[in-house]
Length: 242
Image 1 (cartoon, rainbow, N blue to C red):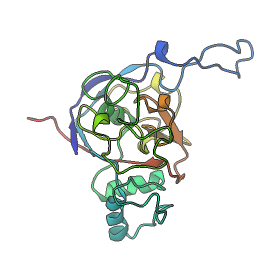
Image 2 (image 1 turned 60 degrees about the horizontal axis):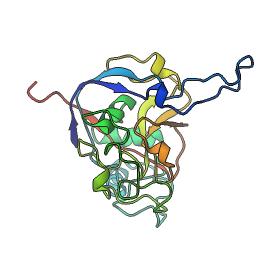
Image 3 (image 1 turned 180 degrees about the vertical axis):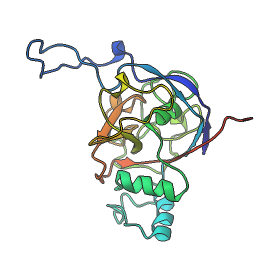
């Protein structure tokens, strides 16, 4: 696991950087600009934590299945998706949560995930500002399937965490609400108390380039099991020397 130091950082995107979004429901002002789900940029203060260097693999998940007698993921027998080194897919949010708990960990909050992806300075992608290409991540259907975790040395974050952009998108702890950033707590935000959708972060092997930015927010019903979503876990930590 990688240690992510605690502290304050600016989460989300500034409105000037966002693609203009139109609000067709505003009858009086149909072309009024609306805040996107990454707006507004806002400061959050996160406690230190540890995060998995890699997405949870099929090999990792097999140990859980055998120990906990848990239901196999969808696509478990698919030869395109069941290499032991590939990230596990076909798992719901609940499956991911239970795996992390079994491993004495938990799913990251959305704010923790973004802090791990940002590294030590504000950047657009985990590796920096260079645009995405197939030397850094698995995206845009370039490789036609998830690749073994850790395949892109050039795409890792400042903290040494792999595949935070592309390969598989990752379930996180929070419920999704597009306007949550307007009301977010500053200290260790954990998202809305309830909702219909769970946040998914990081883009996946079919994502277009814009959706691999580290601030990009996606969401899904928590029961979905597809070929695009996986996860990684975190655990709490103290600052070195505390």
